Length: 574
Image 1 (cartoon, one colour):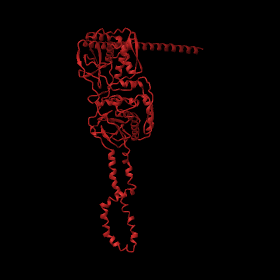
Image 2 (cartoon, rainbow, N blue to C red):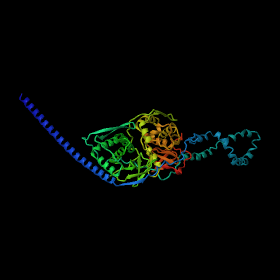
Image 3 (cartoon, helix red, strand yellow):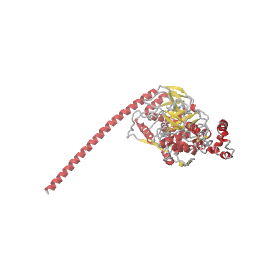
Image 4 (cartoon, helix red, strand yellow):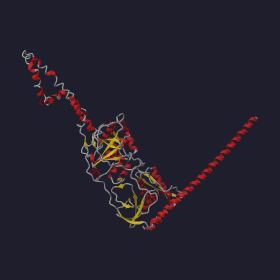
């Protein structure tokens, strides 16, 4: 019994000791959490003070750094006469084998060969045997046996044995591969667009105060619900558009109560993987919902963009406020203002003369018009479209209507001085997952167990024959480039749309490198095969890219569309 008591006492002691230790551990954890929270709060206070200082400095510059600028006219797409599609003629594959097989049944060629040798050699060869033997053999024919033997010279087969001329067909076989393996002399200046840099980020982390009450403003952004908080105490009001009043209002916006708005906006950008242009549009929609189509909406949009790290400028004309954004790309069909060597594009503004604030914010960045990844807009499937190729690949494809609506509003832009770079922007944009899920399983089955050449031919024929060709001028009234998703949605597609889609399919399904080939008025593609593939080709970075033209209807890999001037061709790297 004593042993039992001793055991109980020991157990109770251990429990009490463990309780004391756990309580001590919890207290240590609590103290550590408190210290971490204090450090974090102190660090955030430094961040907030730094951002406030930057905004104060910016508002001071706003009081005096205003100049009047004239707009530069919009750059329009280069007008080129489009090259019509060409249907590949079947006789072209004949040189592959069929004409080489015809000499085998030589009896058909013999009548053609006989007249040729007769004038050349046979008349000379006939007298040669006559003086040599035939006059001596003539006594033999007197017994009338040699006329019967004369058929013997006929079966002499020497004319039939003239397989000697058959090897003469080999030089006809040599040019065939040369024609199929033709280098293309493209221009040396390759069109390359830079990889998109990471999106702009705030000057310092933003953390809204939990104790500040806010209310949410929600909008439908291309079919996707977006909700952003604004402080309940929001009192933004522009009494007048003067430089002093704008600077004072900017200072009031830098109050910590608007941190909730900045924080929520950045969270939406991250969660929906919005590109820079989509982020600008989303903020515009939310601010308009909050303030209406007013100067306050423009100012708030500009403020949040600047706090998010974007290079913006405020401008006014009369009593109207405008927002300008700097772009790394030259946006087509939009007028612009040149400020400090940078092109700024006005949003919702057709005014050709503006008073613009030249004040800059620290570490600000221009927008990129490349989409770094697929945006996560809510999916609203369109009516499926049946696509059927000549090789029997049949698939029903539905796309996300919300993406189509967004692409309709997306500006076309190019890099540097070459407008052809805009095609790379479209070609580098990924297909949406829902489209891949509908399209790729069927295409993968169709190319299963095929060689690289046959697999690419299958994909090439799908784009060539499953899509209908039509000129942009006829359908849209002017030049318009499609993202790959759009090409699968709309009933018509021209050469550039086909090449962009085809380049996407080959990279995604086969993992092969692709470049675009730009001819004046035409766009084609070339593929870098891992296996040896003959055909028209070009060299880029020491690699061989074989021509594949989605607009040369029915043409296999390695065929350049007739009429293309290879001296004018340029490579567009993807």
